[in-house]
Amino acid sequence: MKRMIAFAALTLSVACANPSASSGSAAAAGSKLAPAASEASAGPSAAASERAVAPVTREVTLPAGTVLPVDLETPVGSDISHVEESVHGRLRRAVTVNGVEVLPAGTAVSGHVTSAQRPGRVKGRGTVAMRFTELDTPGAGTTRISTATISRIAPATKKQDTIKILAPAAGGAVIGRIVGGKSGAAKGAVIGGAAGTGYVLSTRGKEVRVGKGADLSVKLTAPVTVRVPS
Image 1 (spheres, rainbow, N blue to C red):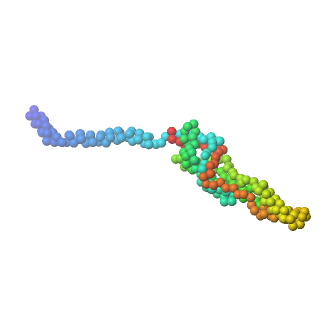
Image 2: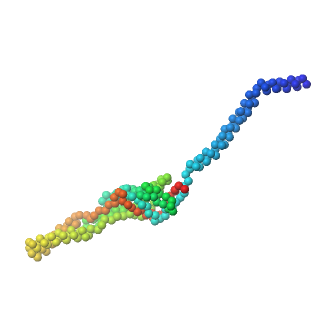
Image 3: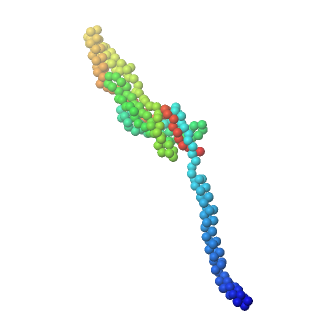
């Protein structure tokens, strides 16, 4: 009996002498649980934050036949352009579908010259043509597009050529009549007409040019799908 009492007293004295041991163990256990609880609470909020930052978009299709209002930035012309030369422009106003802005004003478009023909000296008129093939889609890089060819042709000069021929002929006839009567008038007309014809044949017809800032209507020949903010 005395031994049991002595053992109990010894155990109690040891416990009283080291009170920090049990509290240290409890603190250590608590510290191990705290980070886990912290990480658990931080995880869902971080994921939610990432979802909030990610942009939400949807696809909108511009149908074939849609007209893009383009301001030309690269001047072209029958006498200054060559086939395959690059051509650039920008939308002068936004393009919308059902009230949704698909392409903002200022969106860049690009393409190339498809034809450039100078007028001939005897016949023919100056022509230039171009087609747009790429669209700088906002947030998605470049998008291929298919558009109708835009062409311009110089005005005909037949009336002006006729005047250039007949005017010298008439002048020659007047001078010939004064100098040599009727026969002189005939000879003067022939000489004057020949001079006018020679002048026409030595000069080209009118060139055609489309300057920077020209207002173009570019029609899509195939639909284009664009991603826009939802």
